[in-house]
Image 1 (cartoon, helix red, strand yellow):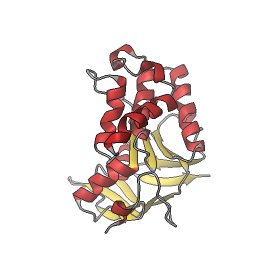
Image 2 (image 1 turned 90 degrees about the vertical axis):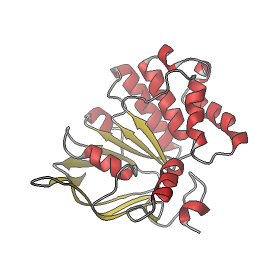
Image 3 (image 1 turned 30 degrees about the vertical axis):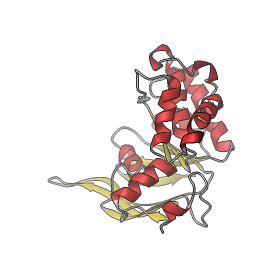
Length: 238
């Protein structure tokens, strides 16, 4: 029986990092080949709050796709909650992604013809959440992001900041081990951005491991750790 089958989501308590990269690289074929990510070593501990900072085209999206198990490295070893994902089957990777990771994207990715509550409930269908607990957990997640008064609303009737908070509720309802956020304030005004980042701060203080991909120094300043990525090279910022 594998690690991913024996541990409950959000409860990983291994001895090592929750995310661990050793010599992880991503190269795309071409003439010449594109080295989107140079060999990288990176550890993220349980409870870390990490910002990955870099300009457009620096390799941030490549790193996010690898961390989120949306792509495989061409070299190196990436362990998520102790599982070597680089060599794992697609079934194991899919299960890890659904149970161990929560995603927040710049564009929200909400289903427009479903209610706020239904959008959050959808995430529980793929994570193994027991049927009897799904609605209760979804309502609790929406209360956590202060949207209990909007559960029956359509996303079309929400502000940008409220839509992103729905997306955050959807990301945390499965009790993930790591929250991955890709430019989470990119479509928001300054006031809504501040509210979203305060929510990330609260979630991290409550023990959730947070990794934010951003080009915005204001967003990066919320994190306790920062790594800079330039031309596919990742370096920790003191």
